[in-house]
Image (cartoon, rainbow, N blue to C red; front, side, top):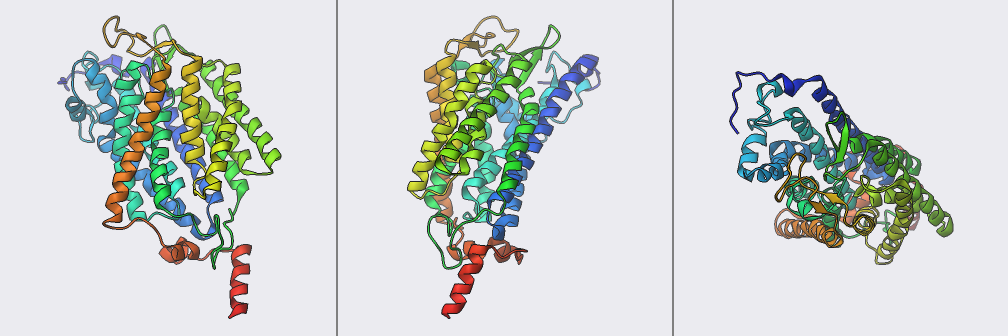
Length: 463
C-alpha cells in the first residue's frame, strides 16, 4: 500500500473524523479504568502477605501484553480487512507492525483512496493493546501466588501473540469465523474464553494455595483482606465499560448511524441499556443465591456473570431479553463454582465466569437471535464480504467457543510442558505460606492476620 507522503489529505483529519477519533479514544480511557478496577479486586482478594507482589505482577503482565500488541499484535487483527480486499497477512504486518508504514504515518499524509479513516485504526492500536494487557491480568487471577514470575511473564508474551491471532478470527466483521456466522460483540472469545482455556491447564498443574482448602502450618485458612475493596473494584469495572462499549460500534453516514463491530444493526442507546440490564439481572440473582446459600462470593460473582452473559450480544438484544438472560447467568456460575470447590480446584473467576458464563452467553445469543443479518463490510454489495451477507448461527457459536477455549488449552499445555522441563513453573508451598512480598521483596505486612497469628502462637507454645 504505497502512498505519497508529500500530499496532505484534509478529509482524513476533518471535524467529523475527530469526533469519531474521540469516541474511540474514550474507549481507551475506559479500558484503562477497567484495569484499575481489576487491580482493586486483586488487592482486596489476595492474601495480605502477597498483595504487592500479585498486583505488581499483574501490572508488568499488562505492559508486556500492551507492548507486544504494539510490536505485532495489531497487524494480525487488521489482517482480516486486508484479506477482504485481496491483500495478505504479510501486507498487514508491513503496514501495522511497530515500525510499519501506516502505524507511523500522520493521518493527513495518507491518501484515503489507499486507507480511509486511518486515525481510527491508529487509535485502535492503543485500544486493543489495552485489552491484550487485560487478558494477561485476567489470566493472573487464575495463577496468582502460585506461578513463578518468569513463567508468567513469558506466558504473557506468548498469550498476546496467540490472542491477537484469535481476535483476527473471531472479532470484527470479516474474520474467518465471524464472516461465517460467529457473533461476538465484545470479544468474549479472545478476551474471556481464551485465558479461561489457559486456566483449565494451569490450575491442574498448580496446586491450591496453602489454606485455601486445607490448613498449612503457617496458614490455617485463606483470608481475603478487604472484600469491601473487591466490591469497589467490581463497581469500578461497571463504571468503566460503557466507554468501551461505545468503541465497539462503527459509525457511518447518515450522521452517526451505528452498527456493531460485527456489522449488525444496533444503536448507542440500545447497547447501553442492554449493558445496564445485564448487570442488574446478574446482581439481583447473585444476591438471591448469596442470601440463600449464605455465601458472599455470589454477591460479587452475580453482577459480573450477568455482564459476561450479555457481552457477546449487547448489540442485538433488547433490554428485557437481556435482563432475563442475565438472571440465568449467576446460576451457571454457581453450578460451576460449587463443582470446582468440591474438587478443590483453586480458581474462583475464570472457569465459572468466563468458561462457563461466557459460553452460556454466546449460546444464548445464537439461540435468541438466529438469522439476524451481520458480517461483511459496509459499502460492499456482493461477494463473500458483502455488507450483512451472513446471519447469526447457533452452530457457529459452538465453533467459536471450541476454537477460543481450544486455543487457550493448547497454548497453556505447550507452555506448561516447556516450563516443567526448563525454568519450572510453580512457587513452593513454603514460599506461598511465608508470603511472596517477604520472600521476593523483603516486605512485611502492616497487620498480622488473625489466622496466621493464631497459628504462630500455637506453634510457639508447642515448641
